[in-house]
Image (cartoon, rainbow, N blue to C red):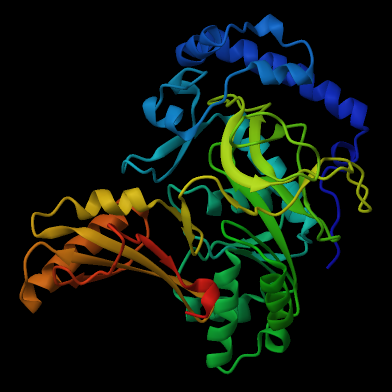
Length: 436
């Protein structure tokens, strides 16, 4: 499958026109936030900046940064720029305190999200002729809905298979003739393995020939494995719930950088230590401002994602929107397990809840086939019986799932079992790149 453009006029727009659109929308967003959101107004006053000070795109640097902590402080609706009655949808992702980071949408926000996702899906090869299977859990997380809305806008036949039940996913692919799939790439690789265990060769017996994957580290090695196992063309999508969800950017058939939709998002790349801009092709932290979001606009949001911006604007595919590299890493301690964002502090908070639990624990990340696995090992405060250990493990498993949305393996260890490196125990042990 070759990509095509969902909105060719906007995707190939002259650079000068893109920047004019950005400046107009940036000014409007700054004014709207200053007038309608008290928290933003205070932050701007503290930074000695007024809406009329934004005269050029470079003036965005006068504005204060926003961070995830700002969203937590204003949970759930403190950053709303419209009346709650105008909000039609809510999504949320887990936070370090156990309270979710909540984002909301007006009808127009849903329309914009559908548009940018349609561009991403079309760039990845999806068309009206496709049968699109969406094996992402539908719920508070943004992922499944973003893909669903984009595919709906394109007009593809959607199979909303949701997450899990891998054998059923393969059966649906075979029965319905699925041609395009979404999800996290490690699950796509796992599905190929499941298919082969069922006696089905994905590249020969199934019709899936393209896919769009995100929410976890996406290397060229993983892409090649996916392409070979399925005989497909796998694309990479980037997004975060604070912007809209998936749909901020994706890679074209050149597979060299991800096009970010600049008519809806303004991107900067900064030194995470100083906050100053870095040069093109120089690694830094992506900082993104929404330009068209109505319900909960964000200015200069620090994504904590490390990447670089390309020094070229017009790609061989014909698109003129800026490209950024794949995500190189994070500036915080967030870990990603099969597409689920987790923080060690989330786990720690749960482990400290039970009176029989000790203070020493470690999180072990491993691979089973292509899937990520997370085990949480925690010492008990006193030596427990096997029955008590089992009850405590069940408690922790349930609580961790409630906070993070992910179900770990929990092992209760005797006091003094976890080795220390000096005074502290090593909290996170990632064995995924070491072959387990």
